[in-house]
Image (cartoon, rainbow, N blue to C red; front, side, top):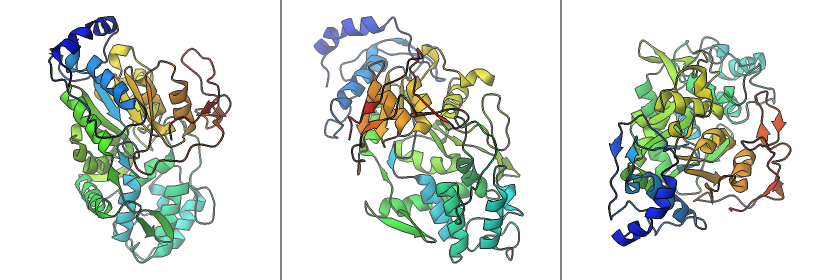
Length: 424
């Protein structure tokens, strides 16, 4: 715990930081008064290297112990493999397929505008037409139907290896396969989908670490665990006056089934949002930043996560929500594990937490550490082995809007050189 004298010694550092504007959240401004017992991260929970100290320093600089007036600083976390180990969408879809919760659409192409004729044909053949439209498909017994659905989820391919999605979309704003899972639950109420996710959560938390499960002939992870370190980080941030959000590319009702496990409510949980009709989910996806509501051209995915943060938290409307804002309207801390998170994590002004799953664009930025505020950490459970060779930052480390692979560039336009994996 910091003592009063320690705070006095640290005032020089705080004064130096005072000139820099603080991130501003949507919450009401308040006066943060210095106090002796500043919220502390649990020293018994292991972090890689000096990462805990880096995070504690940021919390002390930006939180209640800074003694600064102003809006509450904002922290935003991705969910899957950032706050928890494994994927809650996979877990929910697996549970739904085992319990016959997917309702038959009139046409599979009704579920997603990018779905190919090959995928429509494969799904129609595997799942059949005997079940009345709007009634549950017997996926618990129909292995072929469960396989086609999960193969498209997992690989965006049919079981025969044909492309399941085609067309033009901005590869930094959306991916059709991510939109397709919330769209598959059309016909259910949001509360029903949250209930499915909660039942999946109970099974996943009860299963031992390392457990697997089968969906059709697919084998996938059969357990999910909250990371103790991330639960503690969220707890400490909240205690220090931060406004903390989850920003996930999962369906929002699914994410809401899990986020209360780290003390966050539905208002602080942002995910893919389906339009509802007569209280039931439809395949129509709400847009962002002036991108129209419809087929899902703007998801909380890569640049879309920045858009959702700007629009929903900082109340920035229209095309401006796609732009990086001034420091006063940016998050203080961002945490993610994949290239799908790189834009909002890079936007953070205080700490960029990168959970290392060997994803090139995110880890290129993390190991380049241009502003000295990146916090690269191995996964807390079953971490990835060290990446062989280097990350191809200077050539193909980033994804362009057209889907091509391009160099990773700093804010000044310079190319980040290839990086060695340093957190494993």
